[in-house]
Image (cartoon, rainbow, N blue to C red; front, top):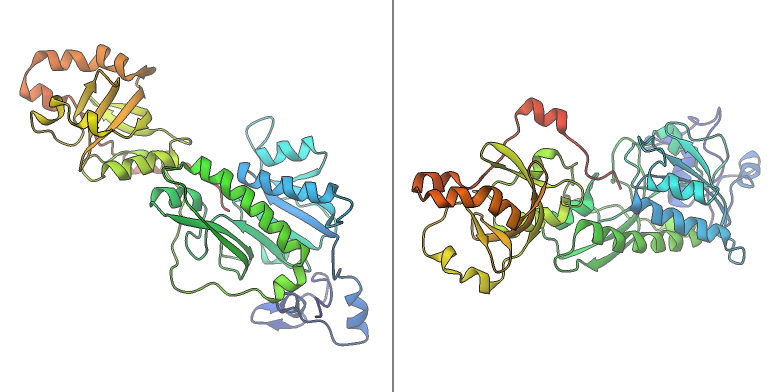
Amino acid sequence: MRVPARRCWGPRLSRIVVRGWPSCQWRALVGLGGASGQENSRDAQVRKKPPWRVLFFGTDQFARETLRALHAARENKEEELIEKLEVVTVPSPSLKGLPVKQYAVESQLQVHEWPHVGSGDFDVGVVASFGRLLSETLILKFPYGVLNVHPSCLPRWRGPAPIIHTVLHGDTVTGVTIMQIRPKRFDVGPILKQETVPVPPKTTSKELEVLLSRLGASMLISVLKNLPENLSNGRQQPTEGVTYAPKISTATSCIKWEEQTSEQILRLYRAIGNITPLQTLWMKKTIKLLDLVEVNNSVLKDPKLTEHAVIPGSVVYHKRSQVLLVYCKDGWIGVRSVMLKKALTAADFHNGYLHQWHQKGSPAEARQCRFHTLRLPTEKRKKRTRCCATVH
């Protein structure tokens, strides 16, 4: 099998274009070589087998695992898979930097801060949870293009927060896709390798991230071992089953008691609770729910929960289990701790706030004694929007 004909930068970059791609990049995608004479002399400049020179783009803990695998492969002199490895990451307010930068510095890898990517020669780029679109000019600098380690079974959950949306929507199966990047759009390139795994019951996005990061790192190394062949055998993504995983905003953390079931709220907590607390209103003040749990059947039989009608948002303290029970659209969830002016256990919240309202005994006041849906104003919502995951 023949491989890419020549480097894809320099004055001959736009010489021939096939479907919007310069001829050299097109040959890299389909595994074709050059013609003869001068083209053959350029073939010699493109490596046809390992060891590869890799430029890595990443930011967070998911990306760190991929970088760790690449670094381990570089250190393994017996296999000779990676010869050169440099890192591109994004600025961070933390002095230590993001997890990828921390690992790169500890491992004495050269680090570039986006948009700077250095000036060295590389065979292939690798992206994992980077959160920035790479320009076509940059992609074409790599004879073998740029690979992306994406934690979903594409085309399901294209976009910046696939793991969060996997948990949020209760998917029972997920996976990792190694794909080749195309410019201008996220997650639309051909699939080189894809593996599925079951989603563990009641898993959090953080726990799932650990599982998928290890799987993705292993899959990437497998792809790099036979890179030209894997590129030539890449398959286009199906047009059916496309879903999108947009960034999670602060508004997503606002519980809608009248609209969301107990299962939906618990999934929301497992999906984003490690990033931003779920929020609601208590007596016109924002309160954050820090620790949510399922309510077991023995608690649900308590007379306090069955002796009178309840409405969504109603709060009852269950002394035996020491949790706040909150009524949703279809049932109850448990809350072990909250943040009002400070962090409070369920017992603290009952003694300091809830108890005095129940003591008054007025039906009207009891109706006020509940959580209300927090609805952020449009302007405030835009200002406070935050990304809960970077692009994978």
